[in-house]
Image 1 (tube, helix red, strand yellow):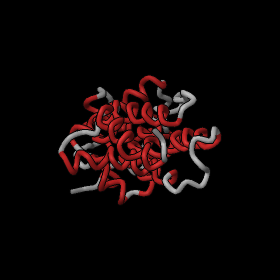
Image 2 (cartoon, one colour):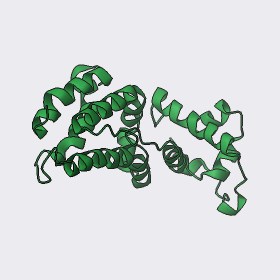
Image 3 (cartoon, one colour):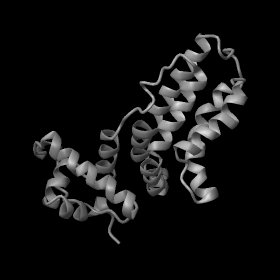
Length: 204
């Protein structure tokens, strides 16, 4: 089977890129991410995206030379931080709210991560884009929550459990579907934080 890179028109260059409106560009991005969630990365083609968005295949290739570049751009457009506005003045309550926020979007993000799994390991650009869009912003915001708790004196700065809180929370998001066949929803993640994360930090 020919690869997406092999199928692209060879003469395409950045000088020939046409200008898309932000709304039209986002329509393409939403379409490719939805198809990845529904069908898996390998099943998504530029032809299929072109058909679903009512455009020509050459339009997509003028903007993004390959499928990995297209998907990477879509991931970066989807970047958001769910925890940025969480600051109750209590580390325990902040972690409960972060868990609830993570759980509210679990089906959408977990499905995307699972669908991209193998492709991400093989394509460095895709891996970098996934981390930039879905992983690094959330981890940075969670570490800010922890740092504020340390600054308030709720947890000692050198507490050994601090390092592992992001891995605990995001690891559970990924692993519950594998281990139990169910999503780690908001209610489950809040209970996990109360049963595991808070006691590890010495918080009530």
